[in-house]
Image 1 (cartoon, rainbow, N blue to C red):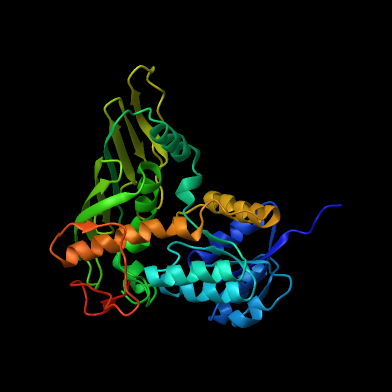
Image 2: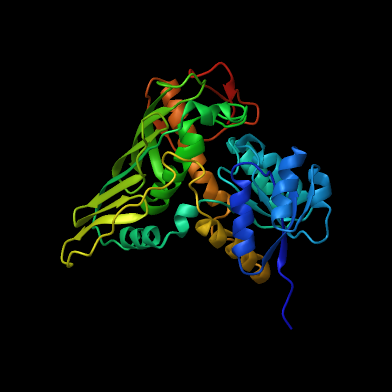
Length: 363
């Protein structure tokens, strides 16, 4: 006898909410049963498109017995609070990137999920791309020999209209930063997933073209725990925007990726592999995100629930990229000083105050 699909509620029907709705609709073993948004018209429109119920109250969404999991799609600085509410209601969680903009809040969210015996899964859809998985396996399997360089360049573009489209964007309080925390977090997560953890960073972050309190341009030098060095660049300031590019080199080979395409695969002792051609992605258009990776995330969480095992990207895994970005902000505040990882914070600590804006940037 077949089992009923797992019911999902979407919390937040803004830009990324519809992508989650598409993913839930396409995923095996999942069904969208409720959409929640504080803007009534937005909740209703998305819900009716998929034959789901809608509400403006997160409490009403979380009390539903037909909801087993929620997709948290609200502004970044609200992710942790909403995920904690979901955990306390006994609902499993698929949380958009980042899990939160504060390491402290991420840790509280992880704790809430563990205490309430629910799974917390992070969203980093680049990890689901077959080419990225292939690159990681090659790097982690030692095919490139001793790793020397691991670089990620995410030179994207966002027009002023993007920042004006919602009051929470480009704010320390709810976006947690700018080009790095909102867009660059994808590249930071992907390169550290492939290279391994970062040991230290030295960085500069600036707002050079947009009248915003957060950075639109950031550059960092990173030393990976394996001894390799690297460059991380994240922007939303350069027109027309380029695909994310990764370059990974060792003393036995080099792999280059442009977007999701492997454009160079040169490994000593192996025949040169046929390489692909890059396709345009979301480098200039935030709506140019397809739901393929999100489908994989939804299906993975469903299997995790059924099999009672951790999802592929746990809260602790999703935390790594935020920690690196926090270290970059801290280094920039200190004039490019070298910041050691992992970061630590005291419960009564003052947080990080960024020179990019007057608002305090919390740990």
